[in-house]
Image (cartoon, rainbow, N blue to C red; front, side, top):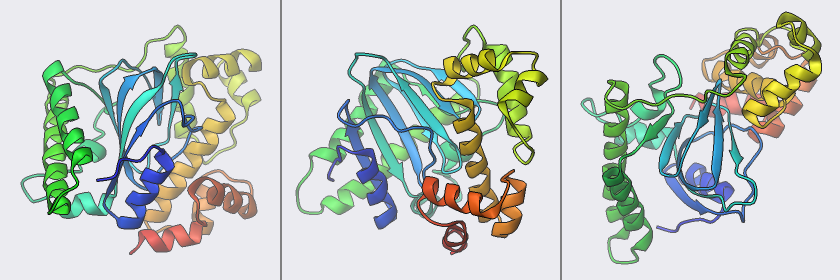
Length: 288
């Protein structure tokens, strides 16, 4: 299988083929601003990462940590300054993974199980790291007869392996925690409030007054914890909610109102820019 050197190319290949794509990335591709994919994402850290914001959880992470991100979770990564940022990213089409699953083995579990809080991260043991890289090497090194079938079986083995690790973590055998920065509790309260009130007006001044902070202090807390501005976060979470609502069958007008947008034109332009297609087209695509 071809390994891409661009996250955009990998995710587009995943969507075009409705299978999966893999990218091995360095500093040659700058990390994206907060965003959402229409595919599942597996992110494996090799070097140079600092913090990962996924929906309302901020994770500190180290080399060899792995993250599972579904198609409704906004995410943004902070890189260490002046250090090479190397990572492997796998994009998987949700429909493909559903078709590969059986009644006994749900290969979507690592993407759909979000019981409790902050269930995106897994810290692998040294042996698990070696096995993960073995599967990636098998997918990237072949160019032989039957390669499509070999890649197919290797990918299934990889997903069984990853879900097994994830399941053991959910059962309490592996512990993972979100970041515990200086502002963590105050930040948690702010981010929780935002996500519970996305349909309402949310301004920096209003939030500052709500949490007894100056506007500048509020912005500093958010920037320190996430690496992005509070306005970008609110916008991304509203689009995230919009995708979920459209997939659930709500009309574009209902979705616009439920996501806190002032007018449909603003909602249409923002959604189309961030997702790549219009709200109506997304609703039609998701219903197929």
